[in-house]
Image 1 (cartoon, rainbow over the protein chains, first blue to last red):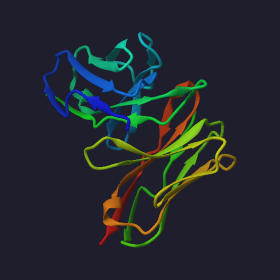
Image 2: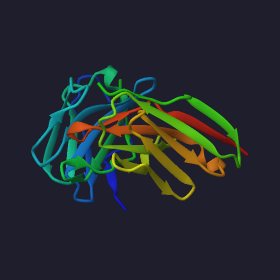
Image 3: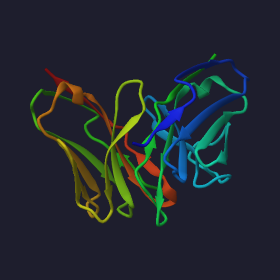
Image 4: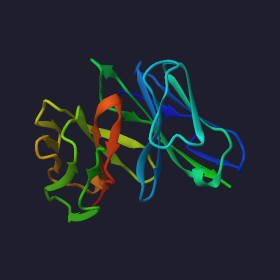
Length: 115
Length: 111
């Protein structure tokens, strides 16, 4: 079974802090994704990566950055946390086959609260 | 721009009934379509993936169909159980390996 793990289930930070969210997958997937999920807005893609050291902006990259130094690990960084970044953050990974994406598998999520 | 719609937003049915959840999308040029379930406060669990060349996929009591030409997919749940209560999300895979999600249908199965 595919396993995607996230470093924290719940996190509370203060405005202006630098926040790191980490995601690890154990299935040698090429693609990794970071989403945020908010009531009424659904899931929105922040960033994704299709290979080590590669990253692409999603729909809402402002205020975020990412790092992918190893294939299995994809980190989301909030450079200076703000209250409007309070959200559920979900990481996912997928296999890339012949240029197309396989099924995406999600981690358990991190509920981040910024005070 | 791809848009994915799931109607209804919420559905409540008695235990034991068969039911259908609907998903529609605006751009038929898709690579695949994936159905997920999400329990409150949790991550998404992948249920079924249908490739663009396929018409349906089955897993246990679940059957998902895909009609690209009409921009529709359905998730059929047979003999529903209280444990099936969750939010069901449909997501369409297009270019650049990305998924576009619907808003979900919140399903409640009443014992």
